[in-house]
Amino acid sequence: MGIIIGIDVGISTTKIVGLKDGTVVSPIRITAADPITSLYGAFGKYLHDNHIDLRDVEQVMLTGVGAGYVEGNIYDLPTAHTDEFLADGLGARFESGVQKAIVVSMGTGTSFVQCNGDDIRHIGGIGIGGGTLQGLSRVMLDTRDWKQIQSLAMKGDISNINLSIGDISSHPLPGLPMNATASLFSKAQYDAPKEDIALGIIVMVLQTIGSAAILSALNSGIKDFVLIGNLTLLPQCKEIYPVLEKLYGVHFHIPKYAEFCTAIGAALSYHKI
Image 1: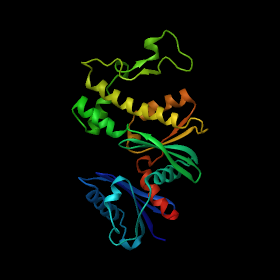
Image 2 (image 1 turned 45 degrees about the vertical axis):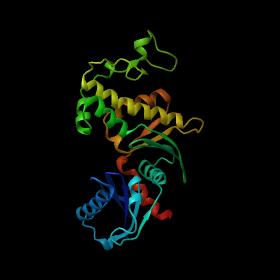
Image 3 (image 1 turned 90 degrees about the horizontal axis):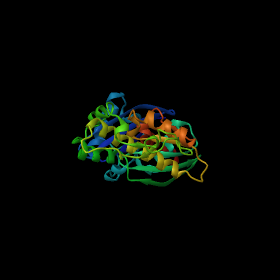
Image 4 (image 1 turned 180 degrees about the vertical axis):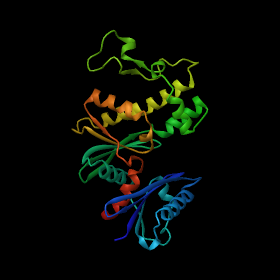
């Protein structure tokens, strides 16, 4: 049995993985000026780096917003498209091992996919994600460079940006500890350091996504959330989501290959077509 190639095609970034005998093989990502260049660049590099011959590829599965630009087969290999939300669910379930959860796909915006075993369905989303982070950083920090934004944020002090319960009350409120956020960016001053602003933007995006995810699970009985997408790479995830876990009695999972879950799910969907 050959290798199944799963490809998540974005507008400028493509993620690609191989699935061989139920094992994920060497996921990579490639950024280019357009989806076609990104796709073929990623595909060629993946085959080269992993010493894979075209004859070893059994199937190519495409998903993502950029997949619509791709018609026909890739390098004359059997090629098919799959629904992105199905791929999100399959990849997150495979990587996390959690069968009943809300998959939180943190891309340019954020989508929520409810998984209950083989019942995988898109239930909504919010227009806040990596695109929000980059856009606000361009306006407020004069940069869109991820590394620079993260470097600034590591030196920031969130207490100079966000209003906490402790800032407005002398004692904890019911269910809300003193360090809980009362209002995002309420304490920000016009001359706030870029380091504080960078941290404030990241915290705002991640905290809003987490809160929206929890609200999306109301009345469902679901307490597990699987985070996937590029934003899972932000170190602040390890600080923000444990706080939300404690506050709301839920659990956030970040799988090993969280960034590549959609591509993994695309490969997994081959057996469902």
